[in-house]
Image (cartoon, rainbow, N blue to C red; front, side):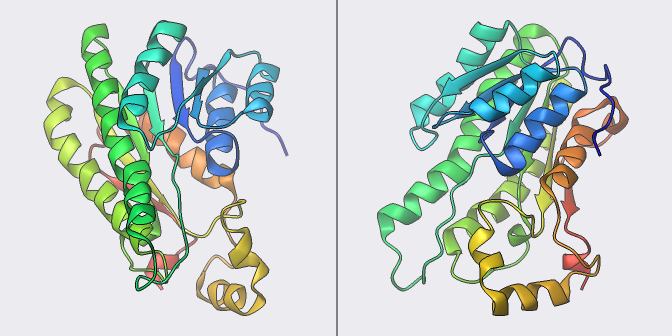
Length: 254
């Protein structure tokens, strides 16, 4: 059931990376529903997300970049500001995951995942912090981590390593930037029904194992994560810095 739009982020610009599908799309649409204009940062098209944002009466601008290239990651934030006029919230959601045995995964593939999943969020957040200071505004940064930031996972060594680093990067940047009025936090999703987790859900045996461990009795929806992200970016979280909010149906408590 759809909810009524609000003006919570009226007049603000939110940039979301990896916004074409799944969690990124849900985050972009949720901010639009709450009154924000949204910049969609990603490699491919985001037509459906842009249409959903504009249907809510908000402005949507797509910024095409390959976040595996450091220069493009940094320029993406500059492009958002040049195009939209300002930036108030950055959500670093884009990530790549490759399921492969650590004994056989290629070094170049491993580096690519670290570049997209860890280096790009740092580069983008640093560029955003520069703009926040120039604007004289209290900017907000929300990273999308993962429960695999706290666990090793299976056959996802690069992804798990990057997400663990994101959890601690959240703390480190909060320590430096909280005195500047910049809030840095993260959301760590558990098992969410997205295109990325489709292979897991298609494996009946593995899905049964995962289902049995989730106390809430269901996988999460992208909107569950989007609501948590919007909360951390809102005034309600004004005194929350360096925190990783786990949205996992109780997975880590098991």
